[in-house]
Length: 157
Image (cartoon, rainbow, N blue to C red; front, side):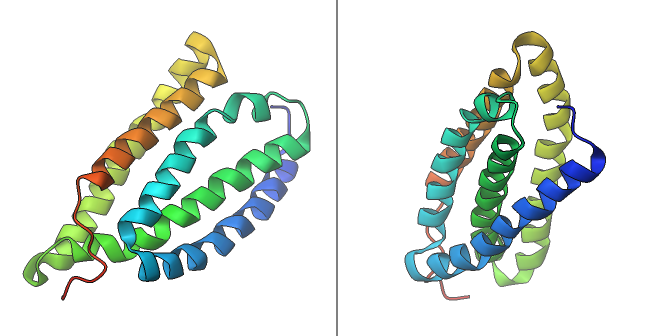
């Protein structure tokens, strides 16, 4: 994209403030409305955000890149907050943290390890819009997975 390391780091440092703001707000919403509604909302917004990737990152302006990073990190904060409560609530007490840590880490390894490879291939095949489609497809899979879960907010632990 042509940014110096310092400039892009500055953009990331600014954008991470949006993640920092979203996380406690999503945690409060998760406690009030449930884990599933918050995760479904963040997933639907992530599906839509995939369509913003190509226009914002190829716009040619620093503000467009900053906006994209702010959107994505805000959505990451919305997603991470309820996951900290949801994952342990999915497992019985005897294996609660083993199950939660295995699910979180295996999901991260399997999902995150292939994402850069796929993104690079997709850019070569069709450009950033294809990567945005990949983001949207991954978010759709996440929404479908959350829909298959039972709400855990009021579950007695």
